[in-house]
Length: 257
Image 1: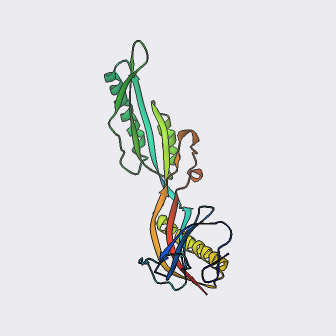
Image 2: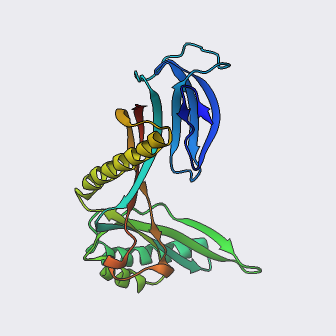
Image 3: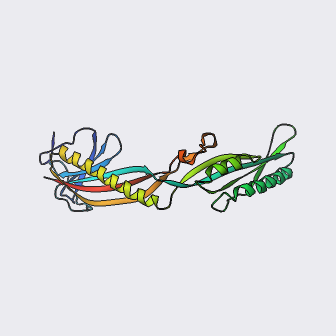
């Protein structure tokens, strides 16, 4: 079925939600979304009979069909460091004895971890609690965190894992210096290329021949953190999960004959 001015309705997967006037292109705004959920779109088409024209400011001037897209792109960067988290516990007949044993173990753990870490260690205040039935036992616990280089990834796992009361809680891969900026440029180019392909497809579906990019709204890059649990740790840093980032941009195209 033709939509105002003889433009054909886009094919395959577009869900039409509502229409409202769009003064930016002297037509009616029709929002649509691709069924896969990857792209959201808003089309500005000529006003037809039965659609009330209400003045509403538009973001840019487009004499034709205004298309709004939201495109995302994901990728991973190279790794040169890891943020680690170690759990530390001690158990004794009283809370005071558990804390004393915890302090001894913490001192021993610091002696093996500090030479391998590339940042100061973070150690929160300990906590204690009683457990068991009848005669209670007490457990004191804390954690030790820091950053380790790729070269010391396996040595730290080996050294810390041998200490009493230590559990490997997880390692998070960190992007190498400069690689995140390169990744952002790469993701931006990918998103722009994907947006243009979507715009060309929709323009062809409407029987329109030309497209023009008139606005780019770029949000920040989001890091999708991947935490590796102790039971799934790989001792080879090259086999560790890579940090993944996502870039989302909003694009506006003008489609016309």
